[in-house]
Length: 403
Image (cartoon, one colour):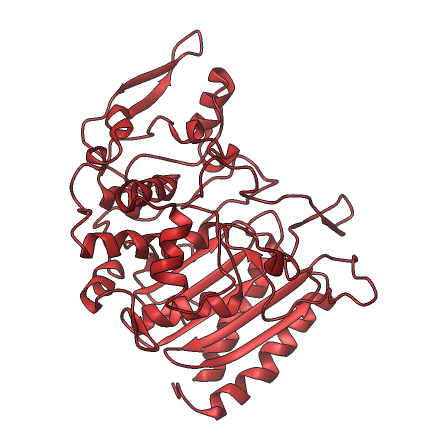
C-alpha cells in the first residue's frame, strides 16, 4: 500500500464519501463519522448526517462533523488496557499476580453453577484466582447480562443491581466459569478501572488524562462531558415501529458511582485516531512515549492461547444483536484487543486488532499494512443490520482502493 501519499488520500475520498452519503440518504444511519489513518497521517475522513436526527434548528450546527463527540462505549477498553500496562511497566501492577492483592473483594468471587428448585443461585468458590491478565483477556469469568442468560436470571431472582446501573455493587457479580478456563465477554475492564484507581491513587479519568489523552492531544476525550464537548455531542438513536430514527435520552455515566473502564469514555474520531496511531507506532506519537515497544508487542499478540473468541447470543435485542465478527474466522484476544488470526473477507490482514462500542462505533488496526480504520455512529441496537453492512462495505472499499 502507498501509505503516505496524497494520491492515497485523493483516491479514498470519492468512493468512501459516496458510500457514507448514500448510507445517510437511505436512512441506514442517522449520521456517521469515519476515518482511515496510517501510522502518521489521516488518509481519509468524512462526516455525514445529523447529530440528533431531525432536531436541527436555525443557527445551530446539527450536522455531523469530524469533531462530533460520541459515546465510545466498549472502545473505552483499549485505552484502559494501555493505562493498566503503563502501571505494569512501572512495576506497580503484575499481569499474573492475584488482583485481590489490590482489590480484596475479588478474593471472594464465586462461580454461578445454576439454580436450585427454589430458583436460588448455586455458587461455589473459584478454583483459580483472578489476575490482571484474565481481566484484560476476558477470561476472568465475568460476563455481561446482555449476552448471558444465567446472569439475567441471577438479577431477576436476587434483585441485585446490574453492572449497567452505574452502582459499584453492580460489579460484584458471580463468575460464569473458573478464571482462565474459557473466554467470555464481560465487565472485566470495569474492574481494571477500579484496579488502576487503587494503585494510582487517582480517579480513572485523572490517570488517563495525565498519562494518555493529554500527551496525545486528545482534548475531547473524557468520562465527563464538558460544556464544550456537549455543544458537539451526538445523541443516541433507536428505530421506531416504522423504522424511523428517534432520539433517545440515553446518556451514560451522568450519575454513576464510578468511571466505567469498560464503557464510559466519550471522544471524537480524530482523538481516537491519535490513540490508534500511537499503537501503530509501537507506543509513541509526536515525541510522546506512551508505552514501550515491547509492551505494545505483548498487547497485540494472542494472549488467550487455544481459548477462542466465541459468538455472543443476545438476551436483549433492544441493545444488541448476536455478536459474531467474521463468522468462521478464528479470533483470539490480546491485552486490550480482539485479534483475527486469519485474513478477514474485507481485506483486513491476519493478526489485525479491533473492537467496537455498543452504540455502533467500530475501529480496526492492521499492523502489517500500517493502517487503521474507524466508523462511528450513535444507534441502537449494536450490530443493527444496516450499520453492519455499511461498516463492512466501508472497510472493504478502503482496502480495495488502497491496493
